[in-house]
Length: 234
Image (spheres, rainbow, N blue to C red):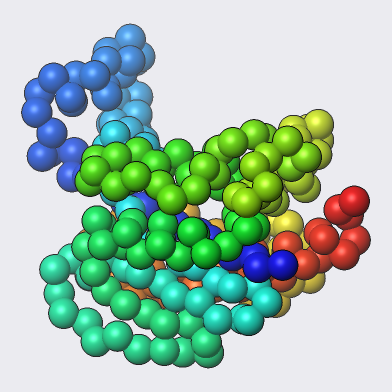
């Protein structure tokens, strides 16, 4: 069985670059709050821009073959030239968002099973919308059905957040870091970098650090997948 792990990193656009109507749409609710809360709420809006494909973009996509233990991270270097390299079986290559998406969908087309953590709730919708922005059609339907038994046979998408929370039956879903910690997965303290941290690294032009975080998440998700498959899945 061919299995591909995938994970994305996103960042919000510059709030000040938006037109006034867009700013109004994003901050309309703030006017109903206390004046003392204005700055805090506005900061929350700005910090959350990277969580929506309407106000953010993809800065890194990682893919990892679970059986071959080889993969790649395609990342945006902000227009800078960074030489491609390979480390511990993962290739790192810089490119723009459109090319990142083209590489991702090309990789996906070669696999029967795709694995993510919160991919249905975040990664795939983001990937599909940003692909549409660039006129790129997905090579597989990764949102065919939430339940594994009803998914397309040639594009099964296993979202580990769904599986480990038993499709939301558990009261707390838990993030990637918490699941890695409880199962003793190595490097669990470094996975699941927050969106605000990605923005900071972008501002500091530490693009390769973002790519490294993506690679760490890929390996963590892969270990989590095998642990789930061995001890929980039926």
